[in-house]
Length: 169
Image (cartoon, rainbow, N blue to C red; front, side):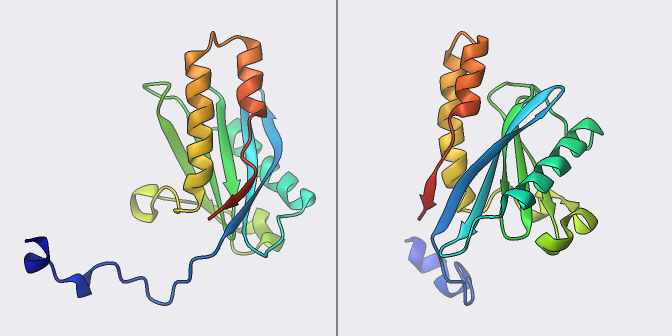
């Protein structure tokens, strides 16, 4: 019955988009006075991960945005994904500790990231690309383990050290 009502020519049009495997590499954790944010690089295969220098710059930018209040650290734990020209900072907490809050930023080129980084409105742009969801799934599982824990320092460290590695296909 659905096919009688719905014109399938009007939905699912993705133009010339070609799906590609995305390689994920965990980097260091960004620490501020009130947060610990795990940092990931996500690049299209056979692309190279961002350099350590570039990821250090990304980490510095995230740290600065938390310290200045542009990013609310909430309960202080989360993760960030740097991809082609986006940085997606996801932090747990808010009204409920099980909520994931997004802060999305874009930049022109990695060579001028500091000069061109600007926030995006997730209500207009979206929250995650489908490839980021592989990381989000991993992080959600790690976070659930933390929520079920005693939430001692060792549990916090276990969450921070539990990172996604590999490809999102």
